[in-house]
Image 1 (spheres, rainbow, N blue to C red):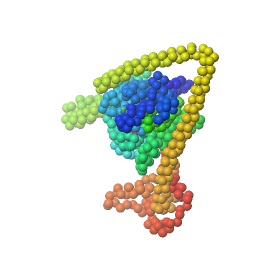
Image 2 (cartoon, rainbow, N blue to C red; image 1 turned 120 degrees about the vertical axis):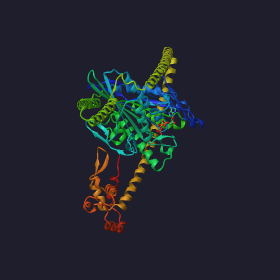
Image 3 (cartoon, rainbow, N blue to C red; image 1 turned 180 degrees about the horizontal axis):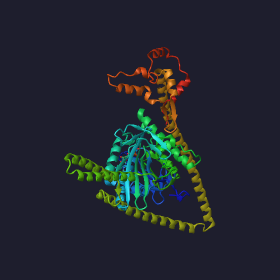
Image 4 (cartoon, rainbow, N blue to C red; image 1 turned 45 degrees about the vertical axis):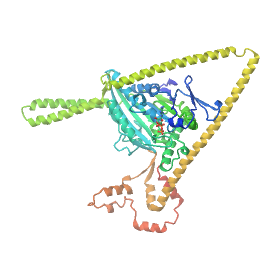
Amino acid sequence: MAKNKTSRQDEIENVRVVIRVRPLSKKEQTEGYQNIVVVDRTENVIILSKPGTLNEKSKSFKFDYIFPEDSTQMDLYRHIALPIVEKAFQGYNGTIFAYGQTGTGKTYTMSGIPNQNDLKGIIPNTFSHIFTQISRASGERSFVVTVTYLEIYNEDVRDLLSSNPNAKLEVRERPDVGVYVKDLMGFTVDSIESITELMNRGNANRMTRSTLMNDVSSRSHAIFTLTIEAKDRVDNKTTIGKLNLVDLAGSERLSRTHATGDRLKEASNINQSLSVLGNVISALVEGKSSHIPYRNSKLTRLLQDSLGGNSKTAMIAMVSPCEIDFEESICTLRYASRAKYIKNHVRVNVETKKGLIESFEQEIAELQKRVAEISMEEEKVIEVEFVMINVNRKEKTELLQKISVIQKKILVGGENLFEKAQQQQFLLETSVAEIENLNRSQQQLEETLQKKGAERINVEEKYSSLQEEDIALTKKIKKVQALLNEVKEEHADKEHEYQREMQALLDTNRLIVREIQLANVMIEYYIPKEYLRKIETNTQWNQDTTEYQMRGVAYTGNNMRKNMSANSEKEKPIRPTMKSVYHSYNTTKSKQRARTSWVPRPSGHRQSGCRSARVN
Ligand SMILES: Nc1ncnc2c1ncn2[C@@H]1O[C@H](COP(=O)(O)OP(=O)(O)OP(=O)(O)O)[C@@H](O)[C@H]1O
């Protein structure tokens, strides 16, 4: 990973890109499909052979690391998540996101199988890691860990931990906070149980369904965020590390999924937002323009810091080894290859305002003061009134309970030996994985040494005679020729990929046109002209939320109708006084309109109908 420092003390770091290959599924094996993936562990190269061709048609890609199909969940954790989580404790932001075709193991890698220790994914392993780290920290350090969990489904942001997970939340931006989700609920956690309970609740609320490509396919992008606030009492410094664990929805070829109707719309939305993510990656890598299209999707807006900003970021690109997925796998590897060149500017986030720990400590001090006051009062009134004592005792008990709840939120280093057994389990597995990795590195070193030895012999033997030089040159020409062919083929592949992307865009476009046509028909036949004009003059494009907004939205027809129906039968609606603001239909006018509805509306109006549709 490239790394250097800038003058502002920021460290410049490339996004770390690794590949994970899942094993062939039982279904693929029974149907007789071939595994076309070979991994060169020494060079970190993945080679895919084009089905039905000889080896020379294979394609190879180099990455920071490649996890072959026999890799364990712990291998992934140790190599990818562990260094980032450790840095989050020091106040760095971190992001790990899983990208890839549908059914390649993104959810398996990020969440895994919850009840089996060795199959737990990155998110639950992070919980064990965090609480282990806290219990190992010095007693001078205090921590508050907060969790949020959201999903982006069909370009709507939803809080997976809310009691109303279907409510759509707004993405906002403020100079002092950056991009954030309004009304997203954050929970402080004090144990592995409490955080696991939140994860399970969120997962249960996540939008999944069975598709032709995956029995349990995630139809949304999910972002699990852990914020670790750490206060050091020695230097009185508070740092905040934010960790985004992202399970993206899978890309899919619409022609292979046979999706129609709402599912087609859902799949188009997924592809569309992944395509915006791809455009952001390209723009960052090319560095041609200062404009990076983060605003073109909610996903890229929320991941703005993770891509090109202040975050240590790792992308795990998932690949299927199956021959029928060759083209999709090549697309994934190309996509991931570009991400390797993104440079982030990372730094420690030092809290300058009052953090959560300080607020909690202040609240505890105030409550303790009140408890002390009550104790003194108790002593004074002991001989006066029995009832008074009871009232005071009740308040005191409540205050002490409150203090205990807040105290639990602040985790003190070394003292909180939670879930000892689970921590040990985690440590044990980590050490086993460490030993395995050391063995593997040793094996890789030996292989590299052997290779180098063979190369030296080659060099010594080369050019011992003119004839040999001639042979070598001919070989070189052949090699260059092969390279040229490879480049040509690559070009043809890219052309092909471009065509397919175009096709996907056309599909999406067709859907949008259909929706616009529906909106136009509804406007044409159901909305009187004067109301349409009124709607248009009261509607404005909001650059920040990237949606149209209505002035006086509380007085729009449907909102007014909602309020009126909420009124009891007895209360008569206050129609007369609201006439100026309530956009209700006028019966006489609608009759007139029905008589003249065959008259075509000016084309300008049709277009303004499109404008009133939400654009993302
Ligand atoms: N490395 C792996 N080892 C064993 N099984 C795996 C592995 N990766 C994926 N699987 C299995 O493959 C299936 C699909 O995995 P998963 O649902 O995680 O894919 P996904 O990429 O999240 O798909 P989607 O984008 O449709 O949500 C699951 O049954 C999962 O258990």
